[in-house]
Image (cartoon, rainbow, N blue to C red; front, side, top):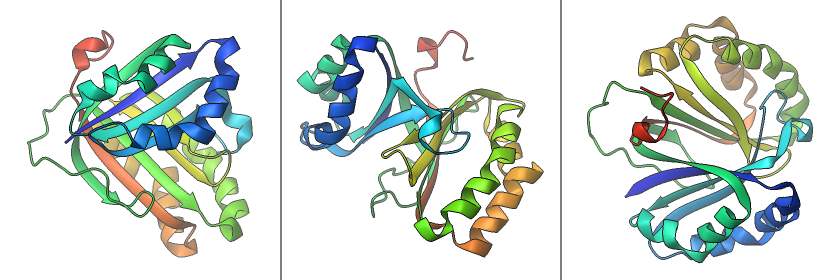
Length: 221
């Protein structure tokens, strides 16, 4: 089983297409032969996890499949490419995954030893509405800390809906850099403790991956 995340930067004229795909494209994506899990998501800064973060030009598509070549060649992906000015494809090998996404555990670790190279982290959570105001007040210090963290190469917010279904996709120099941010930096450590204390989420997931196709990204070594 293979995992890939595509990030498409759509042309201005194609923003309506992207919005429509958020409404109808999910079923189409899941019907691509070999696909076991698929998510279409908007992206943004991830500063507040509200619509004010949104980047209407940038969209993320996540696939877990036993045939990613079939996904690449599908009419669905080819149409996204035709509507985009640029796109990136991150090939991911799961190192570890904890939690669920839409009541499923989509990422199965292969058991391979971590390569020692760049690491991708994907977080995802379903926020309880009753806890939303407290959650949003707690996020800004973590975002500032994240973007100032040594070893962070790239980070965006990802979400299946404008509010309530939020997450992050981030690229790190190493597993150590990610671990330092997650467990040594005070703001994020405080949020981890508050998550347990205030029970913000009805569902959450944290997964780490080796970035397989580092050669496709000249700035990643």
